[in-house]
Image (cartoon, rainbow, N blue to C red; front, side, top):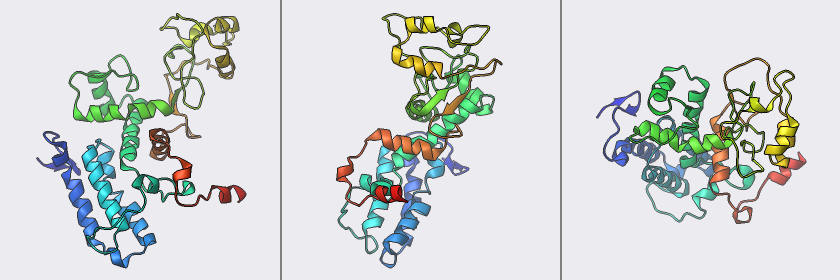
Amino acid sequence: MGVYLGLPEKICGSKKQVFAFIQDRLQSRINSWSAKLLSKGGKEVQIKSVAQSLPTYVMSCFLLPQETIRTLTNAISRFWWSTKNNNRVLHWVAWKKICAPKEAGGLGFRDLKNFNLALLAKQLWRLLQYPNSLLARVLKGIYYRLSNPLNANKASTPSYVWKNLMAAQPLLKSGIQKSIGTGHNTLFWADPWLPTTSARPAITCGPSFNPSLKIADLLDPVSKTWKLDRLRELVRPSDIPLIKSLRPTRTPRAAIYFWNLTKSGIYFVKSGYELAMATAEPSDPAQVLEPSITSLQARA
């Protein structure tokens, strides 16, 4: 099995053995550093700039096995706490707390699992933004012919790459929003188009509804304003002010998705990683051992 552009040509058999070359590279780098000659600040720079950046390219294409991520994390953690080469020392603080942002009392090290998902979500974002690219057309013809990557169903025999991309689908869906456009391409009860913290469709106030209802069906075709009487019959009252704040466009255009957590509406891996860290397992602030600098930043 060979390697092409830094990635294995074929993914088969034990995934742990396929990605073992990442562990070997990281271990060789760490063994070449003399831990006893570096301060904590020097170790922090080495870990953030080299150790945690080394598997980034592979993680942007594949979801690493949990055993591989655990091995990489253990090697980095051992280097952080060690005072001599290859010695075993006590880890005084859990690695999850060290990965917390500095303003929350951590050191800002990357959680490799969540960072891996954020990188894969970037690939899904590109499939949405560039539907005419070669990769998007190939995947669309196989996995989502009448849909899009956000609404793609599970395939019976998916490839390893597609399974990896689908692992990041919940992360992308939790922070993405769809523009209503003219309303002809946006489903009222299915697409995430309401501008809430986590974009979502409207919520019905009745037991039954038409699943194929589109936003254009609730707009006046001449004035392009909302049919308020119809909205009050169908939608929960708390959603009506949010709906009234949106204005449809008069010119038809393709459905546009934008990232709800950035001002530009463009997905960045940094924002995706922050969302993954916030939604994974929120840490208790009382358990953080280091002092927080949030109050000092508020006074600045």
